[in-house]
Length: 465
Image (cartoon, rainbow, N blue to C red):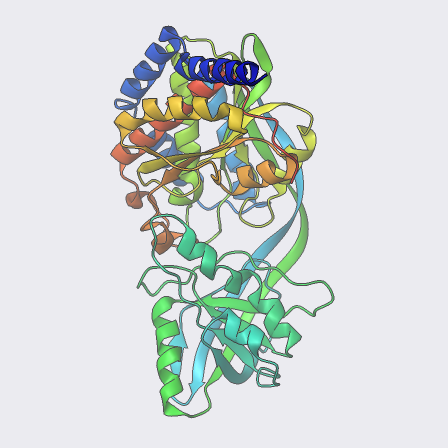
């Protein structure tokens, strides 16, 4: 019996070693991968697409006339590039529209404030609000306050955003924007102001979506520029009441529609399985949305175009999805998740952290697929991309799909060190993009998508969350 067990263990080890030694991809597939990376070095398509989008369309908040123009633009460009099954799939939504807004400090020293309403904010009365400011160093300080200090006041949260290569600093700070209004309203505040969720030192305010809790009366919500947040913080040292006048007009709950724009490269023997690479087509209204997310639109479209132009036939269908309304509701991702919930996805991924260089490749796949992930990483290494963990986060829309439908995911991590200087501001413009860095992104997405489409191993199914 002991000999039998030893023999079985040895046989198992030999099989495991043989599986590890077996090539994950054919020589032809690897040759195509190398050719895609080289072609990306000469491709200017991604930058040309971003240029066209921000120049010809500009800001494109979901449900707006410019959003509809962006959908028409995307359909025309994808058809002209030769993709198959190009289509726009309707997405119903509730739009929000910004109106005039201004704020200024009235005491202890009169000072104007640069500010922007947060997405979904309700309006102040037409005559505005004039009230004392209750200062909190961060969201946790507000949540810990069980007194009535905030009642009848304008709450100010001075939550700072740490500059990081990835989005961790933003992730730690953004709850002040998303949950702050509800926390302030629970304590009887008249309005909420926050330090902009950004890493810049410019006197520009960062907008972004906020949410109201069910059963809590909504209050006006705004962000002030980082220098003006510093001013409010300095005024605390005088020990005198700090007062603000705020006028903010906005309209929410507007019934509207947008569209997910989709294009495909049909697969061969596994055509019913999907390699989904995405970005979001909408932007906030303050700027033309070059880095958020015009860059992503250009990157994934150009990557798929390289595969199409190569003449090589992918085994699985490669699907480009330009999502509707990522910024203010994820309606496009929710619609896609419902429509395609029964379709097998080899992976989902999204480019949505600007135009910085890709420095890391991560996955969220079943353990049996990890040898394929390592083999893809070997092909990405010449692009200075390192292999990370199997705890990847594939972007906002793709992340929702991963969680909701338990689909596998791949992540190409971009250097976002300066992304949150411009994110959600009027300063999100084309000059922030380096065309050469876009080319590296395009090469990485093309190589990853091609090899994932060719894999003999399925990346899923994943366990249900």
